[in-house]
Amino acid sequence: MKVFKSIFILFEWMFLALIVVELLSFTIITVSNYVLYGEAREGSRAFYDPYTLFLQNPAIRPTIGSKSSTDTSDSYVIWIFGGSTIRGATNHDDRTIPSFLAQTMNNDRTDRKCSVVNFGINSFNSLLESKYLQKALIEIRPLPDLVIFYDGANDIKYFLEHRDVYGHHGYRRVKALIESYHFSLFGLLKPLNAALYSSFTKELYDKINQVFIPVEQEKTLINDLVDATEKRYDYVDKLVSCFGAKFLLIYQPMVWTENCAPSQSIQRTERTQIVDSSRMHVMRSNFAVPYEALLERLKNKRYFVSFRDALCDRGQAAYQPDGVHLTDYGRKTVAVKMVQLIESLSLK
Image 1 (cartoon, rainbow, N blue to C red):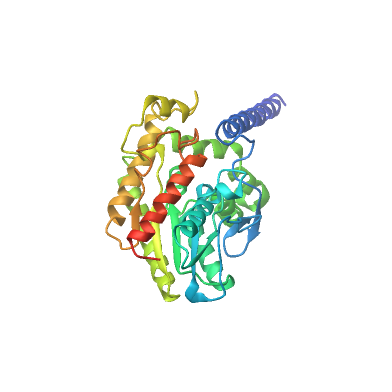
Image 2: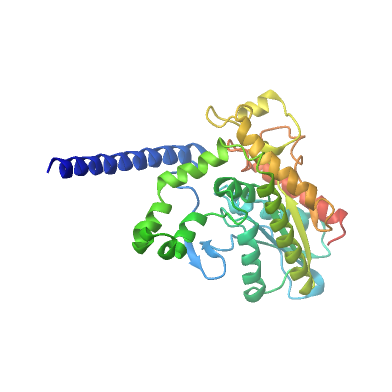
């Protein structure tokens, strides 16, 4: 009896320890979400979509400043895909990058009406964007003259978290639901196994991967990421050309990957006591190493342009404290540079 009692007490303490660890992980993640995003949850309310796994409501955020025409010779349609930086980390529809782009394009010329469609979805990376593009080409009209992917941050973020070239938002939770039955004997209890892999403790582990565990030495994994990403973008380029449009991939600027040092006053404005890019050396390196590897592989592609240092000459704060999302000034500056790029490439 004493043996059974001891075993029972042991399992009881183990169960309590797991609860404490899960509660602690929940607390850390919730607090960090408040610090980074100003709310308890990472990501916006989503709904299931058979093409893309999930979308948000509205799936297409309104673009203020677009102009359209029934005469195709008098119109120019731009579709722009990306994560929250494109959807717009702002409550104002007229202050997103696509809205600033449309306003600038239509102010600069009067002989053609420019329509910009904002397909940005919070947490999307190139994997989910390529699926969303296929959905849009099937369902949305008019078709585009130019398709823009504005990428970099989310591809690297989810690669770092999951250390998998196919990482994306919700990757572990979706994977667990599909694979739980045959993954292990415990998988027979499918709901419990899926809950384990979608736990706050697992999520905290993923975030530790991103912030504290160096990726620099994992050269084979980084090369696999580069190979998979190159193939994905080459496919998107061919797909878009089949519809008579052109593809433009813009790699976005981030504090973590910039090759410049703005003034100290601007740097102080762009960071918090917790998110200080000048001190988080591992995270800076974790973002920079795969980012540079991707730039090196993609730099000669006809569709590729790097905006890595597009905000280096900023005269005021362009980044929000997370070092990725932009201020109104940052979004407008990027949009203006997009217009200059489109004009220089004679894509209009």
